[in-house]
Length: 414
Image (tube, rainbow, N blue to C red):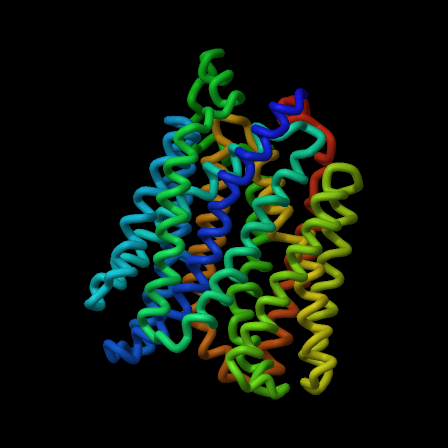
C-alpha cells in the first residue's frame, strides 16, 4: 500500500472514530448537565432517570444503532455517517439553548438516536478500509477517541464550573461544533470499497432473518453475552466513583476530575501499548482472557478489602488498564469481522441495540441494588465481569491477520 493510501486510511479512521468521542463525550456531558438542570427546573429523580435511560448512554443509542445499521447496509456507509452528524447537531443545539424540560428530553433523545446510528456506520467503515493485518490497530484508534471524549469533557467542565449552567451549555456547544465540522470533513470521504464492490457484484440484499442462521446467531450471542455483561458493569460503575472519592477523601471537585481523567488516560495507554500493538498478531482469545482476569481482580478488591487509598488506586489502575484491551475494544473489532458485508452494519447495530437497551432497563434497578450496600453491589459487578470473561474466552474467534473475505469464506465452509 502506498504512503498516500495509508495516510488516507488513517485520516478516514480518525474521522469515523470521532463517533466514539462524541458518544462518550455526550454521556459524560449529559450526566454533569442533568444535575444542574434538575436544580434549575425542579426535576424529579424519576424524570432524570428517564432522560438518562433514553439518552446516548442507553435506549436511545440502542434504537438509533439498529435503525442506522440497517440503513447502512441498504444505502451505504457514507450517507449515514455523514448526515447523522447533522441530526446529532440538531439535538445538541436543543441542549445548548434549552429553556424548558421538553427541550432537554427531546434533545437527549435526538442525540442518543444520532450517536447510535453513527456507531455501526463508523465501525463498519473502519474495518472495511483497514489493511487486513492492521484492523485491530485501526479499531484501537476509535477506542482511544472514546476514552478521550470524557477526558476533554471533564476538564472543560472543571474549567467552567464557576459558570454553572452556562458552563454546561458551553461543553455541549463544543460537541455541536465538532459534529458540524465532521459533517463537512466526512463529505470528502469515499464510500466503503467493500460495500461498493458488493453492490457492483449484485450481491443480494440479505434479510435480517439471515442473522438468525446458526453460523451468525452464535456470533451474535457471543458478542452480546461478552459485551452485554461487561457493559452492565460499566454502566453501573458510575455509582462507584463518587463513593470511592468521598470515602478516600478526594473532597474537592478538582481532585475528583483529576482521578477520573487519570483513569481514562490509563485506558488510552493500555489501548495504544497493548491492543493496537498486539491484537493483529497474537492469539486474541488469550489477550481477551488476560484482560478479563485483570478486571475481575480489580473489581473483587472492592468487595474483599476495606476501601483505602491504595485499594482505590489499584482498583482504578487494574480496571482501566485491563479494559483497554478487553471487552469494548474486542466488541468493536469482532462485531466488524463476524458478518458479511451486506449485513455487517445491521448485525453491529442489532448487537449494540440489545446491549444498550438492556443497560437502559437495568439502570432502573441500580438504585435498588445500591441500597443493598457497597460490598454487595461490588460482588454483583464482579459477577458481571466473570460472566463476560467466561463467555468471551470460550467464544472468542481467531481472526488475527485474516481478511474479511477469508473470514466469511471460513464461515461458509464451516
